[in-house]
Image (tube, rainbow, N blue to C red; front, side, top):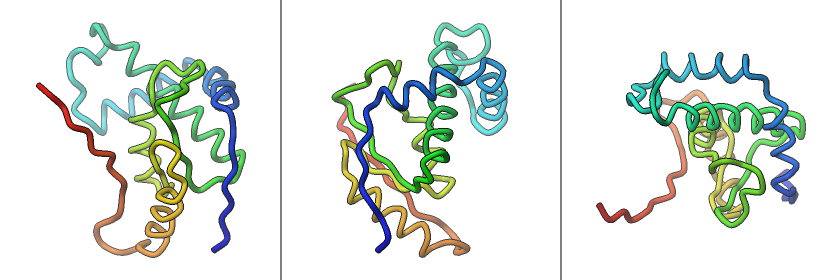
Length: 138
């Protein structure tokens, strides 16, 4: 099927995330604000604005890491953030929208399957994605 499973330490990704410029983060935040309804806490001056900036920085670092490696899919895990301030939730959603395969908790089989489904459905109406369900207690 033409895929390989490689393992990298989160520190390898963190190096790319840390190299992202403030200007690039601000530019991506502008895209977020144009594309999504951003809650007041994440807007400029909001109490959680830094969290949105961290998410944008992680997305840009991940894109650089994936592009440099020629990768078409990836996984993540809750177990080891090793310098990441948060899991790449926003990045994962946006990367899947751009055709990357993704599997949570190290599930490389789901990442490979999702990428294959994205390739097979290219140009068709609708799309494919991955969702990791959680049970919340409100």
